[in-house]
Image (cartoon, rainbow, N blue to C red; front, top):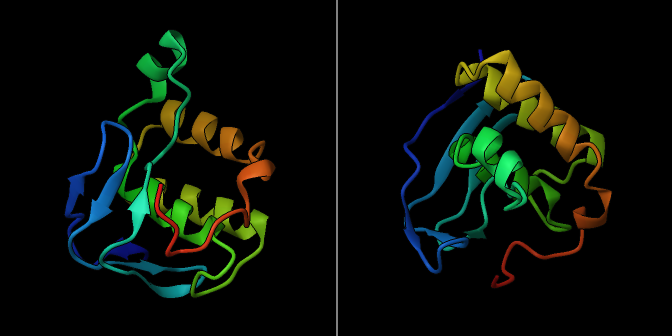
Length: 126
């Protein structure tokens, strides 16, 4: 059963960018164990700061957003397809008991984000 094996620990670089201060490990039913390295910079679940969207979906999927950001990088381990990265995002939201009205719209949103896929390295600074 999928589960986060370690807590999410980060420091804020800015109000939108966070730096992991410890590795984050996620056990995925789809991919096995995924470890996101300490020092990784993430913007989490990057929900547009449009008032209605952000009120509904912002600040709701921190753990899940970090895994998704990692899997979108062109040199992540494991290296996965666009579709698989999005499926793991949904899987992580399910394992963290997000309600259907949060997880499915957020999943559908990332399915439209192809422009962000494989644009950055895991070591890129945001």
